[in-house]
Image 1 (cartoon, rainbow, N blue to C red):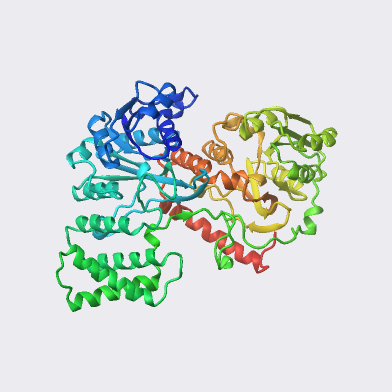
Image 2: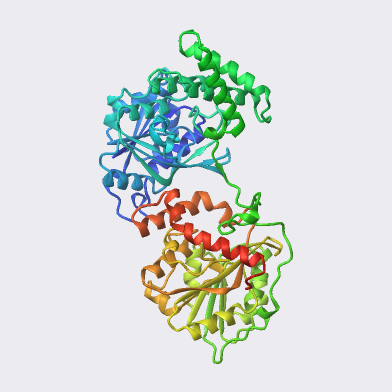
Length: 620
């Protein structure tokens, strides 16, 4: 069992969301058709503080056998956590604050990690950060400390940390004298006691970043002065009460950055930082004098930090900028980025429009799932029907759109094999429902905001006819905006069967497969996925021994805008689903460093090919 302690401090509605996420449990615990759930995943929830109104409001909807209400309104948050620790029965314990939420698979992932690493006493994962409205804005990524010095500075985000209950009790629980960094202080005590940390590179929780957060301070934003002073106290304690020159430089530069705010750094900041650093020495060394050599060393380290601009780095998280055009874009990789340049007219080579299908062309079946995409649906239909391919089955599954989609489908009804509009359960069920209507030798699905480029179907059919041993093909990708203007291109090297296990680089709108491959993997899209169903299908094809080929041609265009699913769903859904797939394929979710290593060769080949294409030395 895992015990989850929630101090009853903060906004009642946020507390309610936190309690519900902890009480919901993993999918199978809620009666959904997923995996069996071991007993270790079932959480015990302990809510401590002024709980009377909360209990009256939410107790009826919560499992009474798993929720403990401790009415202790007199306790501060750290004392409330310690009170919960005394009542906890779970082998591991987690601490959530108002606005923190656990994801549906978190407890299962933690339980599996405990089973694989029974000697671990602290398990930490990654966190999705949201704004006050719950919209993802950034992610808190784990970083493994390097060297002996780094071991004293474990940086986690509270809701994704699970600690062995017995060890927490042995170390005395949270320091109740601390208001902001009690959990960070506890992690440092874990380290000094030689306890084993286990980092899990998966999203385990979400945290709302609020102006006046109930969870105090963490490493998601620059602290205020009282919080920084408390953090300095914790670090001096973790450093065996030694106030080193590096620690003084860190404090002085961070204090100056807090006072400066968003203004750019100036030369005057060095003097300000020096003053704060020297004052810190007197404060944390009981007024002892600071010698001239130590002053010189501190000044040098301060100057280095200011020159490198590393003052805010420790308190900076990775923001979501999926549509940003980065500096020096030309020399960087293009793959996995959704915007490379300003919009410009989409250029299609003349030869693409002259592509002819083979004699007795094979039947191609395509399904388009759609829901309220009327503003782009007609362009998608025209891109498929305008191919002029003589052996085409085209089905559109509309999820009951309330915009102009149905009127558009009625206009094209005589050119479609079938179409219907009504509740369908989502994208994956819609694709399955549509493909069950078809009989084509070659199969594909095309989302209602993407398009095929001219000649794509004839090119695919000809390649399959010439290469009967090939099961799956795909091509290069064009990126277009909401208006259909080009904003980038992915030029892909030949298929790499090893790299695809670590990252999905196959553009879904360009992928076609034989029906024999579809039937070999069960004849369906996995409907438990909302985002990564295409990578799941690819990995199942790979596991079944199917042969992939990348065609030397741009086959389709992927439409990009800020609120589309591929952008807005990436962090809350997409990343978690891709982590799940990687863990299923590789046995455990790989770290970012491991993924980078494994796909580095593929990325280098892409980079070289992209530059040759831009220089006009290769043409597609």
